[in-house]
Image (cartoon, rainbow, N blue to C red):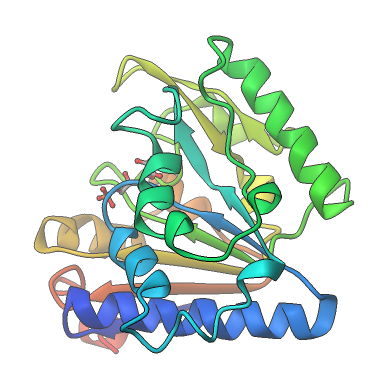
Length: 244
Ligand code: 6PG
């Protein structure tokens, strides 16, 4: 596990963009394509904007036509809903970059049957990656104040899921279903990147990285690379030894 501390949210977005570019070029050079799972919530928006911004140095480096975009999780809402993770990524990045429409694999969360949407997404993942156990090149994740990641919340039955790659847990805390990649899929990722920003996350970052095991985010232990990128505020409670 690598923990990288960046001075500001501005630096955080650009460090994450460099990682995205590096992993995408590497995968395309080896396999001709790059598979990435985008996270939702508010933190990754600036990364997505920076990647697609023509004023920034990243847009011209990204192999957009060779990238297959997936989502680590989605809210149980239609794609045009303000809470949609797909909508956020589309508005911040995908609508501003030369991405083939067929390479955008959103979760069909408008399906009233969340479990059916999850099953369909698992099939899509297997089809596109041509693998029974897809190994995505990069999986982006965030961290909630309760230690959840993707839509794997504390106390959720999904924490114990060993078979399915995508699940549709009922999230009592939010009184809604969510559709989420499960730990077997996440932990099979080649590179897993947590992006965490803001002073309000400092306590949970400390507990997840340096505290006893009790949070879903601590179950993310990929066979490949595990990277935590934190801004200074989010890292502010970490003990020196993890303070990059
Ligand atoms: C979601 C996310 C979720 C998110 C965390 C952090 O759909 O909400 O995937 O896991 O990453 O809740 O959210 P913020 O970045 O908004 O703090």
